[in-house]
Image (cartoon, rainbow over all chains, first blue to last red; front, side, top):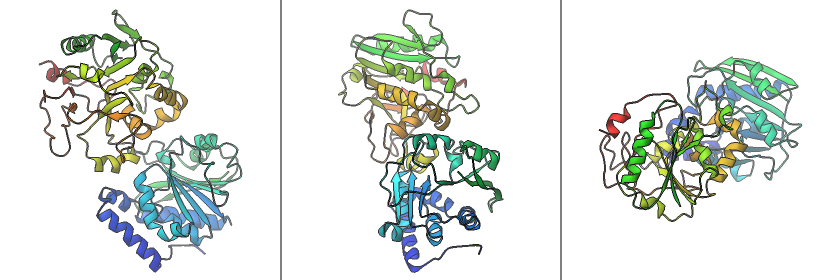
Length: 215
Length: 238
């Protein structure tokens, strides 16, 4: 069945209240970014992932997020999809703090872990994972060097994982340093040899978004 | 031996900038020093030919990491002596440069732009904007900046693709804006200020004034890129 949201339980409500309280006080400078991470378009992108994974009957146990940002939507969606462990790598120290607040329940039960790392410079295979990752999700491909680099840095470790990649052709933002023309180029950048899904979606904010799933 | 280095490439600045900088150093440095200019067109006795081994990584359509040539100085292979002070061509020197050669050198020094609002720096960190560091003045001892050059060499393709400026790269790999510390350290408040941006946020932010009790005034505003012209000269040498 097509998913169109996630459960906003009392635990989630408490965690989100705490995150938003921080944004209103000690982490005021994050306000705009947290708002940007909480739009309907952001939710659309993350729902797109779990719905296509269901279509493909892909039910990973341990997922790595690259540049997962505050992970406020993707973590509860993946948990509901049956994922047991989620490990997020992001280079922004504020992301670590806030993503732990948004996902406090999952942090406390060690389902969710966040590391400070620039994944285009540092390998991530040497982290102590609760369970060896079987899926890597990068919904921030437009913000970083092509995925071949990640594969080189972690050569020999993530051979069997399924990659879920999203990007865009929207180049009006300065930090979109790696826009692609379409899903084909996105798959090409990651040197996919097995493309399980390839698609395009126009989001609520008008942005055209591409997604590829494959190896 | 103390060495003062500068760098000139392309046609953004003409030779007179180098001569003027040399004159300023001679007027404002009470310790002995050698003066060198790294350049793509060496013509004078103090000129040193710029290497080119990183140049092919530059992507003109992106114009990122456009000041990469500064990294060539960090090899220390071209100049004898142990103490290095780099100055951008468009700085104005107010005080005795001897100060820089007498700093404790546990870590290299670089300009910490005290005029930056750190909330903005943190907000824009992941967007590769609003860097708190500025490479217009750098002080290092022999060998201290070699790890930086090596890191750039080892990761050139990613660095030239990712970082809009050298200063941004420094802030991501050699400094932690949250801790205000790192492999490099920032010159203290009161040493260096910016003509275009001010001095210390939020209390001393008046722009376009000289503060002659400071050591150096910067005219670089990190918004200028290779090949762009500006009218700094009328401010600097008026």
